[in-house]
Amino acid sequence: MAATLELLGVLSVGDYMFETLSQRLDTAFEGLRKGGRVKEADVKAVMREVRMALLEADVALPIVKDFIKDVRERALGEEVHKALRPSEQVVKIIHEEMVEMLGEAGRLNYSGSSKPHVIMMVGLQGTGKTTNTAKLALHLRAEGRKPLMIAADTYRPAAVDQLVTLAKQINIPYYEEGVSDSPPAIVKRGLKRAKELDIDVVLIDTAGRLQIDDTRMSELEDIKRISSPAEILLVADAMTGQEAVNIARGFNESLGITGLVLTRVDGDARGGAALSMRAVTGVPIKFMGTGEKVSADTLELFHPDRIAQRILGMGDIMSLIEKTETLYEEEEALRLQSKIMKNEFTLQDFLDQLQKIRRMGPLGKVLGMIPGMSKLQMQSDFNDEDIEKRIKKVEAIINSMTPQERRRPRILKASRKRRIADGSGVEVRDVNELLKQFQQMSRLMNQISRGKLPNIPGLTA
Image: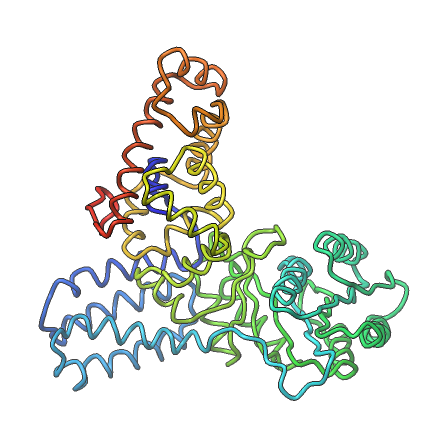
């Protein structure tokens, strides 16, 4: 993975939720991590920086005060004074308290409900509710369940059309009656149809609203009464900011929401909305959505420990491993490992791996999961757009080669390189640079496969 990115000359800077908060905290911990003994003045200075970082990230003031109080009490207590490395212990305490603030891991709870289990999707207009209903349906099918979506947003005809289009796109059963009847009546008949089809889980896409109002909230209460949902998930935009607290509180007081689905977490979000909504409602964040595309990799289960690690610049190796595992069949992974050990890794293999990595999502986000990479990302001038340009150039060069040239790049002499450069719209020096870096990467991968861990310039932190 790192070798592939190095071949592209990439150390990316990625926009993901909590990035600003992560950068501020990293600065706050820099001096603390270098030291051994921790004095009260050190803790106070760090907590002052942590407080400012949380406030700048749009975390509500009461939540910040409680967090700082809990951390300070532990950081100045016996557990730090007795620790061998007090500075590390303080960072550990902040990590643990942040996990506590983020809440439990995201998972759906069907206990107490009978089949078909119902999940109500609620939220304001423009938060991506319909799109994330489809994403969740896809997630449920991957778990081996049989979902059905009900189009219950009759106030916006386009919402019904959108749900139907998405359902057909991902081949998920759906129920709709257009906009001719009331949502509660449509839901009632939709649930009857779900039983006839022996459906496991029903997802109800309710009407979005511009603001919380009594009329439509009363309608949601009727749908809740009719469907007896196992889960009521509030779909909220991670970029909402402080207003997110009022939105979450309003829906929770009226409906008793059971979880949160945060959307656009890959946008320019500072992360405070997530922390604030979780703290105010007391319900867990269950899923995080990225982008508009409905696919298996654009809706993630929420893992508070992993998110806390990202915030504190510790990376998120578990999520990276899980993303990678979804792209590789075991047989394919073994075949690739064998080729690497035999030093038979070709440009065609590299092209295949590059295309797989692209399917993992924005490379800046992927890099952010690697411990120590966040600081390198900040020091880099690259962004995801630059990375995409580099990838397209590499693809164009390799695609301009014959199958034989991809397998045996050593046969590439001057005339062949000129033909490849002309065919891919680049200069010969670009072809030479790719070949040189590919050779370096092949040697590196071969060394690693044999248990050697060479130092990779620029990728150590």
